[in-house]
Length: 141
Image (cartoon, rainbow, N blue to C red; front, side, top):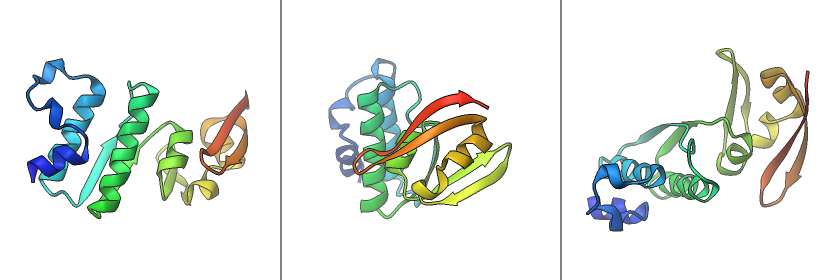
């Protein structure tokens, strides 16, 4: 089970290293492997891409999506990066001051109106077939 989990997150090569030697991205992968090995049915992930460069952001989110799909694990995560959330999420919940603003598919939730209401920012949203939603900040309200 452990070996399969390490393989799923591309972390087999990290097992001989000390925790303090691991980068934030590598540590994220070890934590995900641990959750898989424990056969969790739900993953609660808080800001999985914080402090990671773009390569590791994409890698971590791709791993989480693959785990969710192949192991049939519900993954719930908090994110402030709306662009990445639109690419890697099947469903979004947009919150503002503890209240739900919208729930649904990314393209239905991340609207110019909802973003203005939530963040106080005027944006222009473009749809890209491969890159999800492109959110262009224009000004504060």
